[in-house]
Image (tube, rainbow, N blue to C red; front, side):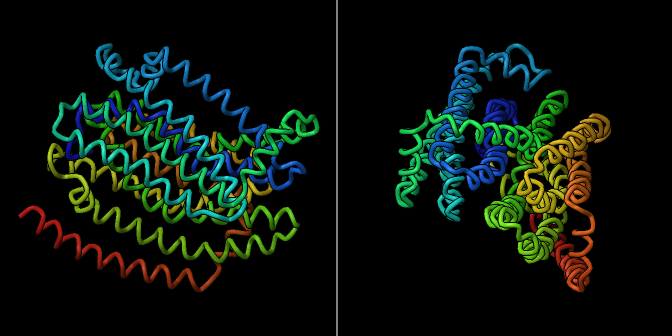
Length: 443
């Protein structure tokens, strides 16, 4: 994408059109739905009926939203890019309508993935995320030499094709695990009245869960709105840098939290809290070491990383430098965001979704305030730095919500000294490597 379009007005158009479905994709896929659904599903006496009722309820709402956006795409586009001209809004609106239908597909994927997680099967969901990217890459390869307007239309259609592929592989996995029998039975007895109380309990968990889990995504969404007031290309700098930032966050922190959540939920349901904290302690140190190395690598090697990934075709050296600056600011928040994900599991497993939502609200308000201040001083870099500062606040408040004593009990270990020494040595090695790479790149 960077090669075909660079960091231009056309990438800004596509990123705005893709922003809202991508926002919901990250909210759903990164735990909001699962962390509300899983405890209720585990406790449900009629799992099939409960699951079917929740699925139908969501699909009706999401399809209605998609139809509204299809008929009135300008309203949503204007809400995302406040400061854009009428011409840009008109050019972006049709793409907004196309991309929004991905939300319907990603909810189906998330629902089926949650059922598979109940069986502690993660491979299908993990691998299927590549299908969206493969579809988009294929469209770029096919239309690389076309006009930019054609390329962004092809990308939007590819988003829907990728979503359909994701749904298909999840349906195959559901069949292989015989989970389709639960859904068929749930559909047959979906009108049973005694599932209403369970549905009410799910609602009480879901909406706070969405808000609590979506703070980083909503912050990113607000960044897009604020970046529309900055110079052209700012939205793209944020998007490209955030893609790099999301890679270690996803493969380290989010992967660990998704894998741990079913077993922690079952341990707490069985009143076996020591076992739940034993699992947290086991994963904590691995995450801290990996996120620490990723943070140092992302900050120190920001320019070589961006150069390697993006600087070709329409993506210039100046755009590399600007994106690298934004990436460095984002990476400061990697450890706090990742650790907050881990400790938040206990809030959701204990059904303290409202507490998590309050923490997210406080963090979001602070983030918006800092963003408005720093964007006027540092531009797009300021928005990324504000996100990292809010990530630290998010972590502190989450640890306090779970119990600071639990956190300090974990970190009172000689392992902390080993990690600090290891990271110090890694810093020296990375600085030396960066100097060699920069010299080689620019000569």
